[in-house]
Length: 109
Length: 113
Image 1: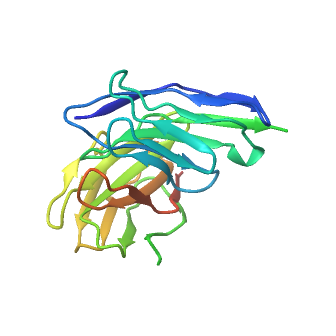
Image 2: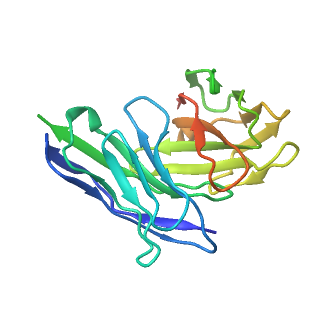
């Protein structure tokens, strides 16, 4: 099935720093790609998605572009805030839906 | 909309006790999942149900059983709890098709002593 390799954290940044979390995928066919976020004490929730090559997903200042040529879906944000501290998971659409270890982001004021 | 509802939110069990974690979704989703989350281990799939009437093992099924009671409900049972099953358990559901996102419950924090 489809799978991802995601950079492991933890990642610690100062407020207003630039964020990149790398994610590369292997897939048969053309899966959709998702970034999920997990805030402390909560379940995962969708952050953004892209359904085909060259699509850009965006939400809350985060962006990720579905790059077929490099099989990547890197998450970026230009200026992180303390409230972005969370664990981030990259995942391809799949049955069953499996996740990696995620990347823990801590943003300090 | 309630989305995905898990019960209970917290539970403490003694080794050898049994219990069932309940999960229900109100989004008419075909697929439902149970995961466990341990520190540093990410989310690991225990069992999943791709459609009503079917269940399949995930990465870490040992010590667990599941029941897809109907399209809405998917329960996880621990027949004889062990300390190694201390974890946070998440239920999730998703629609059919590659564009559909998964929706998660708030989790059940289980401690086995």
